Image (cartoon, rainbow over all chains, first blue to last red; front, side, top):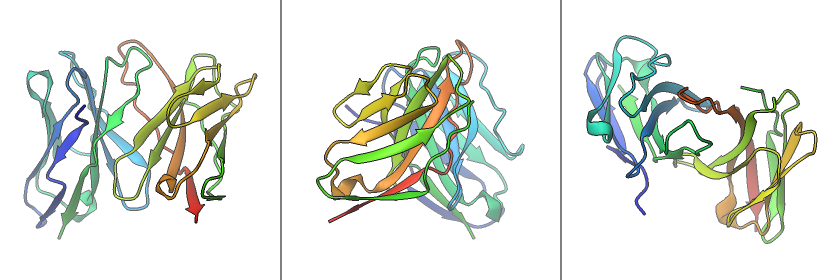
Length: 115
Length: 113
């Protein structure tokens, strides 16, 4: 079946602009995660959505970052007033309810470059 | 989550078994061992996970020692397409909690022709 889909695959923008990154999770997956991976670094957790529960935003690095998940499916990660240090690959993952030992399945990410 | 230790890199000949070790000596009783891999320019790919019994699926086998302080991921017949960074992660499952994955630096497996 279809996996996690992310768009755009690449985004180049100027410093100070806002960007929106989209994630379409696997159908039926109620848990959704955003991570980012800077060049040569491991994955850094950003935010987690589970069903209708309040999201866990503990990984968001600043108030310029926000995310929404509408209708329990598609999610959008928004970065306002982008800075050069925001350059990274932003990865989305989804899973069946995280209360079980369900593996997360990742998309191929959006490569964000801030000029 | 418990810390894991993996070799930085390994080589394997094409067609041979690749055995990737992972130490997790501080693992607790309710933590699972997960393996993911990341091929260049792609997102991490789930491979396998287990708690204490050995596990096998179409991709790999996972061997967990009896004391659960270490494990080995086995790719039975490595191909060039298996060249990737392999991550061993231990993770507890709390109902209602975030259960985020914490990736270390992994092992770069290079399959040689």
